[in-house]
Length: 166
Image (cartoon, rainbow, N blue to C red):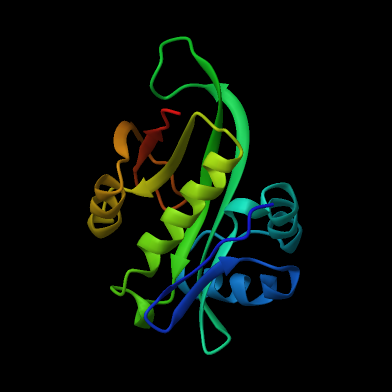
């Protein structure tokens, strides 16, 4: 496993550890309507620790990103079957947003996904989350599809993806 560690001001971005999972779950519960079982977090950390990162300040988790890896049809090539990463969830506590943490988490996850030789990385984002959409576009993601009533509350999502050329 490649160890990712970087800093943004006083924030540290690093690989998640088992001891971090309760803090990650707290961030999720306090920022997103979508919640997962403890087992789900544990499974993703075990399966793809290279792309499960936390952001912390003063030893307090304030954000995370977790991804999975799968095989499926390409978001870029017709009839292409590829190895791809999927951003399952990313969140930053509200009072820590706007400081580059989201960018650092995604950049770290991109590094982790590339280390596994994936062909692309994709994610879903609420169509109303214009700040996130712009961030993903700035990092090279493109809107590939709109997913009608994707979220439990009926909101649509954009499927956004980035292709890697090695």
